[in-house]
Image (tube, rainbow, N blue to C red; front, side):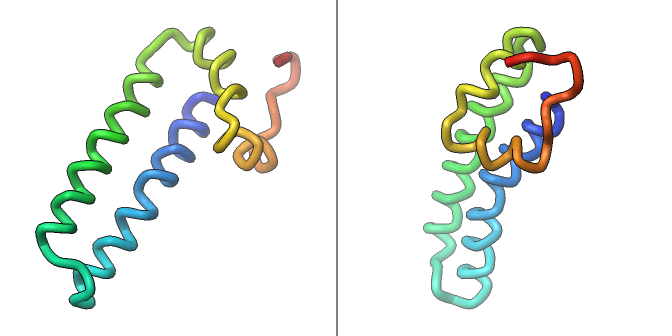
Length: 85
């Protein structure tokens, strides 16, 4: 559950960065703007990664509290049998 949610959160952070690279490649985003996006993405990813280095029991309780990501994620990743909210 934790690994799958960590991967999902990574995609949430990296998809917009991919779009920034596409805009830079097409010439609609400057190298400076791309660099700013890279720095922001790095900082955001560090924030997410810090969560996933905590104790797993704590994370299992914390993940459902993510109101933005959890409802979307849980549709495709049902809670394992025997695990309660």
